[in-house]
Length: 420
Image 1 (tube, helix red, strand yellow):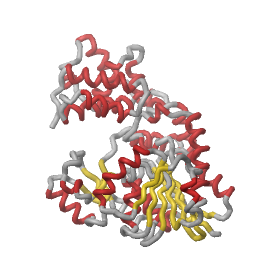
Image 2 (tube, one colour):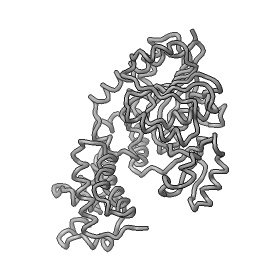
Image 3 (spheres, one colour):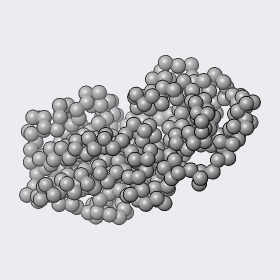
Image 4 (tube, one colour):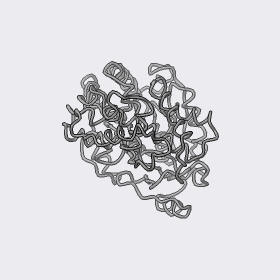
């Protein structure tokens, strides 16, 4: 159902955008708060507002270039609707002023090929330079175009309760179009973005919402029945739930996090999942005494480290405007410290997986290389070998998936094994 486009609805989008462009809070939190404060907005109205303001965040630099010296929130939105969302002048008629018709036509006619490369990619200069240095100019353009598209909605089947084939059939019976994900054997990609939380399949715990790339991180850890496993930076627990299911609800699975709120968000998900082997633990920092109790005892440890999040720009486009050289440099120090602390938990012969949802070598390969140089008792296990055992065909000693290649969020991971 499409929203009825009116000046009032456009005004809501303009109000939200004004708040977003202050970059004081994460974009999804700003939008959610606005919708809570304006409950009169229906599902279609909220979808219009969210999609339009996120289009401005995604295409910010090229939109500003098209606006030239006539920049305003109103004009950003008009260009986003006309260019990013492909609306015609007729569709824009309810809000388009006569004095704006020629300006918008000229803005729409501007050729992207004439824009500087970073502007064409809608990336800040520092990030464009970093990515072009890693991937080259041509692939960076493909990557940027993929990052500037909305992400699909992926599910992970809860194998404790159902199978992928059964869940696909159940979704089809509920009128929800879906297909298996190409990489993860546990994933399902929806064709649309239906409201899922009231669906009996959701409330019964048959699935969790989880990007396909994120699912691969759990498969790379490859936990077994009866093992002692630690999710070192558990967050709200998406990967914790996957690890518990892979362990067949046996053994002990510790979910560490520094945030009470995130661990509280894990509780209802745990209840739906049917898992009983998960032990959430609030820690103060990576040197917490609670961690030392497991020193040298864990069979497997997953470190999904705090990072820039630049691999999730399809979902969180504001991050590219909120991050910079300094914030990344601070993160790499934190990542190295967390990885070193997590390594103390791993028993001889055990596995440590370091993962991020960043695109940057500085947060990924460089952190792993520095760790291996300082810890000669750990060695790299080829990711392709580990994943192949589980039916996943991806090349490389380290895992890297990208939206323009695998149609996932951008994820990186390395599997490390302790010898002694």
